[in-house]
Amino acid sequence: MIINTKLLDEVTAKAKKSERLRMNFNLHDSLDAKAQRLLNALEPGTVLPIHRHRHTAETYILLRGNVRVMFYNDRKEETESFILNPATEDYGVHIPVGQWHTLEVLESGSVIFEVKDGPYMPLTEEDFLR
Image (cartoon, rainbow, N blue to C red; front, side, top):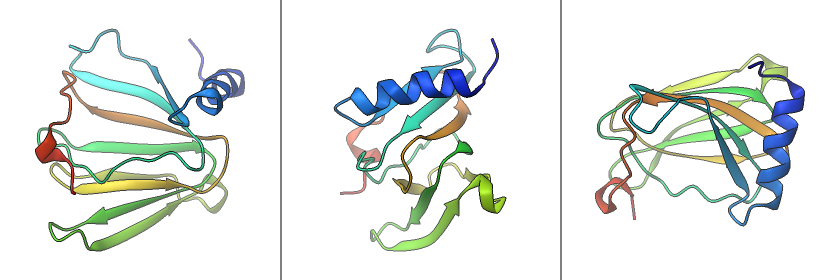
């Protein structure tokens, strides 16, 4: 499989039609895979609650578009912010294990390549910063 504009456009079209304004395209074979690799098409207005992954680090590489990634402390205070935009040569961010984070989509058609250790583990209530 080649990851090209056609594929990104297809996943983006699904994100635009989705109630959540985002759509995953999994590159891993199963939720039990040791590496969870996926494309995540994101549209402005999508809501990703502040959350953490207690068992894995996570890496985002922005393939196209413009997003802002924010890190938080336990008091829900923003501690760092990163603007990802391939046009400015700011391509990605590595999110350490346990780091509270979220993102804001700044441009329609944004797509990230996302990687984290598997197997897939659903987030629990204690993984959301309320």
